Structure formats: C-alpha cells, structure tokens
Image (cartoon, rainbow, N blue to C red; front, side):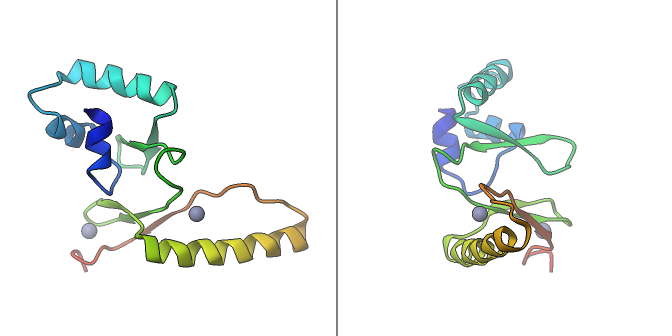
Length: 122
Ligand SMILES: [Zn+2]
Ligand SMILES: [Zn+2]
C-alpha cells in the first residue's frame, strides 16, 4: 500500500500525506515501522528539505534519478519534469567533464534540489 501511495504522486511525501493516502487501513505506528523497514532495505529514501520534518520517496534505483523544485514560500516540493530534467542532466554532464579537466576530479554522482518560488506563489 505504501509503495502504491508513492507511485501515485510526483513529489516526496511527508508522514501526514502518506497517512492520508493509506488512511483507515494503516495505523500511524505501523506506517512508521514499515517506512523504517523500506528505508533499511533501500526501497524508500529519506529526504530533508530543512522543513523540520523529513519526506520520503521511492529510491532512485526504483524510480529514476531526478531532482526537486522546492518552494521557499509554501514549502511545496515537486519532482522536476522529464523534459527539464534532460536539460539539467546535459548541462551537469558538461560541467562534470570540465571539472575532470580542470581539477582532475571524477564526478560519480550528484544531488541537486532547486529552491525558489513556485508558479502559484508568484
Ligand atoms: Zn509555493
Ligand atoms: Zn541529475
């Protein structure tokens, strides 16, 4: 049920959001327990956007590598859409080649979340 709840959304979920998705079927204590197990086995990962609570999403090995847009006004967090993601990945790939050339540092992975103001708040 939890994994299904993650599959139906395009943003990292807080515990209240997950509770709402599985409401009446899963008590809160068992939600926390199952989240911990799913994190331990690498199905779900914890995300911290400095909101005072953590969010969860399916691990990138299961979904796909992606980035988030974080609104500093309403605190909404959404996955970057696929078309924009392609552009970001291309730009980062170029930057990683430049870093290898100039610093001799071989980038193996990156994590990137973009903070700003969402369309609704603007
Ligand atoms: Zn907003
Ligand atoms: Zn990326």
